[in-house]
Image 1 (spheres, protein in one colour):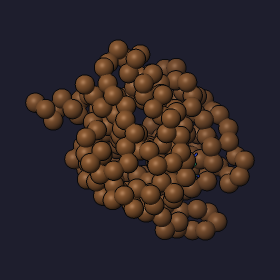
Image 2 (image 1 turned 90 degrees about the vertical axis):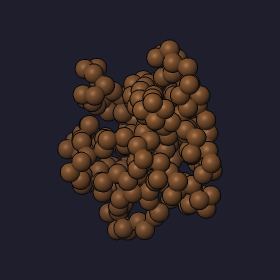
Image 3 (image 1 turned 180 degrees about the vertical axis):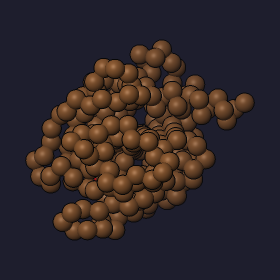
Image 4 (image 1 turned 45 degrees about the vertical axis):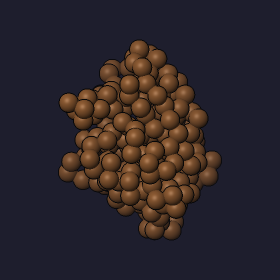
Length: 208
Ligand code: GLN
């Protein structure tokens, strides 16, 4: 039975739990979805979601609980992870903001991208846009953007999954997926299903 964790400090935790449950149900896969905060909880999951919210708050709390290094270690061992919005910021190697420059926040760093925070505007800039994401099939994916970041540089092992207005808004680097938008808010569980599938493969590889 596959276990998917949702990092449970701040942000849209419940929405990600619901979207993952929906994904499991649609795939007819037996699985658990668990809120994780502490290192020993991070050690037990087969896949992890870092939700959207406020990245500085989330990474500060995760660092206090000493979970950040464990998340980093497990990702480097191949555990699938999906960071959405603030979660993608946490995964990146560098984050800056056009107003303040380098944000000096704690980052997990496994995803070889540079992030521009609030790349679509600072305050009320929330919007939806149809995205074409080849990995998910032909049908457009509704991206929900809320004070969203964008990816301003990608490393050589990073694959661009989606762009919007010439800005990179979704990427993949092996077991790591990052999205600038909130797939848990679109009512479309395809991104979550993709993560579940990666987690099942990871679990099988580890137990055989
Ligand atoms: N602007 C937020 C941050 O920098 C991300 C916004 C979001 O997750 N919706 O953490």
